[in-house]
Length: 211
Length: 211
Image 1 (cartoon, rainbow over the protein chains, first blue to last red):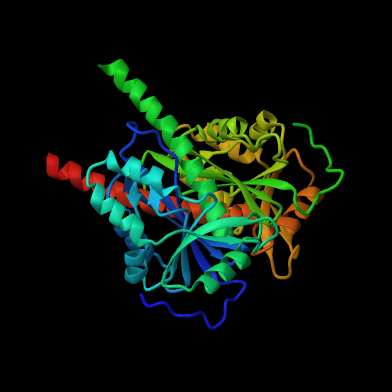
Image 2: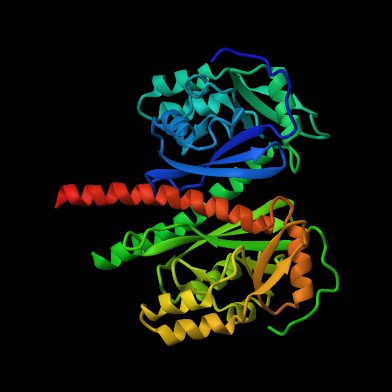
């Protein structure tokens, strides 16, 4: 998608926040990824869910398909991700995602991604070059600070200007330093995966008893 | 739990809204039930999930255990259910739930429950008397109207006065006629069960191919 400028960013702009649940390596093949539609920083309008493979390559296509199939797609104005990696190192190609959805995509993290560490971790996985290329394609994380007093985040962008992205973060971060859609997506994804871990433990223990 | 009166109902009172996902009879044995912690009618503070049996008898104990295990339990001041039946006719005993949790419980529905129809449906299920007893124990649904202009709901109560329940509904119904925790629990539970149905269809179709 070409980078267009927003003519106006309404306080109640419809934002999709996307985050993944926690998981333990070796215990799960699929991780829940939830999408939460928010009106600005104010109220929840919709919920969607998909699953992506741990350290897989399907994060971009799974998110794209989740959003395109959703009844909220036509209303959503921007997609905000909690970083460009989900379920371990299943890398989201934010440029491709933005093109597929015809929507701007912003990745927001609280910590500055340490690219040396990321590179080292990726080198241990198959298809290093493919993952590394996708990650670097997202561009370096840009520091954005003091959109609210004391707040700082690091963002990567596709299909949106830095000025507009900053303004969207400022308007939607009503309860914390993060856009409200992302804060809530995180709470729900964590709650789902907690349960998931317990189910898995129960299943593992049942299977042990059977064998 | 004895019915105590609230000394004060803060606009940001912590409320747990509980709702179940949709399901098709014969397609599922377990249905997702989600709990959403809200600060009054304003923002989401927590998320929890359990599963209950279709037409089973575990709704009361499963909700009680979900809430008691949650890190939010100590902060929650009132539990609001979307009606007293979950997953078909898995009846919540709101008096028992209120006693187990030491919290007031309010069941809220948009339509007045038609007890003749409920009775007819229950008569087709095993353990009619046990279900009917639990349902009638919740007391007749009381109409509450105009807490917001044009709004009407029907409520059943345990451990709370009608006056306090009405005030809690009035203060938390910020975006619709329903308490915000219940509106959001409904959106999330519906979103989860949509996905669940698709997974189930995929599984059924895989199993058909295998056999």
